Length: 214
Image 1 (spheres, rainbow, N blue to C red):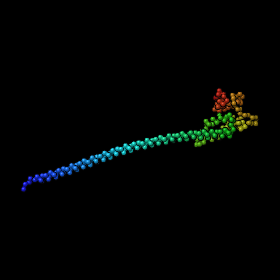
Image 2 (cartoon, rainbow, N blue to C red):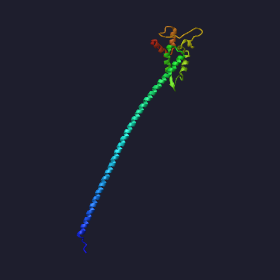
Image 3 (cartoon, rainbow, N blue to C red):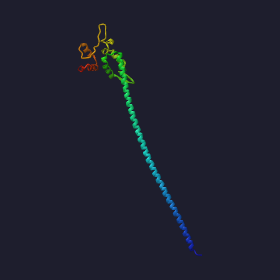
Image 4 (cartoon, helix red, strand yellow):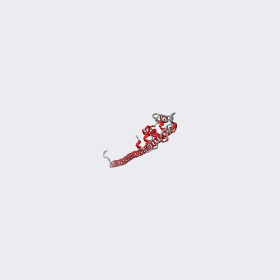
């Protein structure tokens, strides 16, 4: 028996190898396609991730900018409200102190021409603490009453209400001179000289005699 393959066997072997080659080629083609598809999906996923990252960064930046604008607006609004509060507090302080001084001047019957001088003098001394006005730690009305009851204060009150050194006594009647011009009598000069510096200077301005200021 011969070991040499026949022509038919060789042809069959060749056809088998061709079929196997064709199958391998097809499989390789499928693998290449699958590889390309997989790579494409990876690239798309990476691109989508980058896009999402960029969008998130943009959105975060927009949100941060919006928050910053809101903070800036709130700060401006608060500053305006604080300014309004300070203005109102200052107005209230002025009104309350002015009212207390005016009431005290009325109650103690201060001479009309001395009211502006004394009012300015007391205002400079007044403080506003805890919603109340005071002078030297005392209620404004109490301080003014005490001051006007003193020998110095007696010069500023109407004669009928004076109980100080120039008040009516058993020996006669003495009234405070009312200066509307430069003093001409000794009593008027004594009165002018008895005034505290601030009151004297204010009165000199009122009567048009700035040269008599101290």
